Image 1 (cartoon, one colour):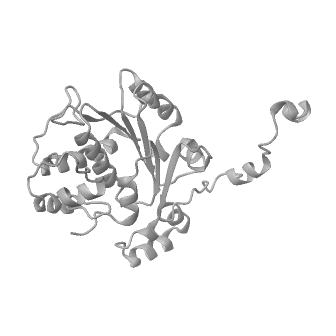
Image 2 (image 1 turned 180 degrees about the vertical axis):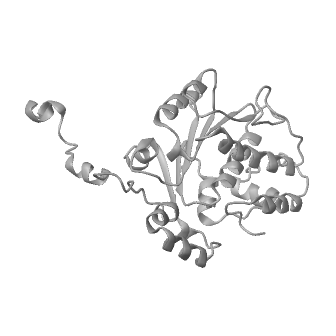
Length: 278
C-alpha cells in the first residue's frame, strides 16, 4: 500500500475498498498493551506511515506544532490521530478550526471515511453538518473561523488546520475551548509570513510545545521533476511551501529577523531612557 501523502479522492476510495469492514475491539487479554496510533492505522486502515508521520501519530505531547510542506499528508495523519483518540476515549470532544469551515470540513470528511471503513455507521452531531458522532459518544466537529465560535464550545482536543492563515484574535478566542478540560492543542500548517501566533509559537522557547518540522526532503514519493519545476517558477514560494521557511513578503520594508536582532531581551522597560522609550 502506498504511503498517503496528500491523499486524493481516488486514492482514498482505493484505500477504503482495501480495508476489511472491521471494528477494532478490545484485546481478549486485558493486560495486553493497546496498539500505538501508527500500529493501529497500519493494521486497520492499511496506512503505512513514513518516519516523520509515525512520529506525529505516536507523539503523546499535549501541545503539538507540526510545521510541514504542502502535500505532506497532514490532513490524513491528523485525521487518523484524532479518530484513534476518539475511538479509544469515550465522550471526548474534538474541535477543528481552519481559515475556512470548508477547509476544516476536509479533515472531518477524511475521519468520516476512515470511520466508515472500520464498519461503523455515519452519525452527525445534532445541528452540525460538518461533524462526526462516534458510537462511544465522542464527537469531532468543525467550527467557523470567527471569534464568536468560542461561545458554548468545549474541547478535549483543539485542532487548528492551516494555522498560519488563522487570525490571531480567532486563535486566542478558540483556545478557551480547552480551559476546563485541560485539553490538548494541535497546530499544523505550512509556513507563511514572519508574524502571527503560528510563527511566534514556532520560534518561542516555551517548553510546553512540542515542535515537529518536516520538509519535502522527508517525502520520498515526491516527483523530482515536479519539485524542480516549482523551484524554477517561484524560488521564494518554493522555499516557503516545500522547505518550510518563514519568509517575509516582498513588499516589506524590514524583516522580522532584523527587528529581533535590534531588541535586547535582557532589558526591562524601566531600564530604557524615556527619550528612547517614547
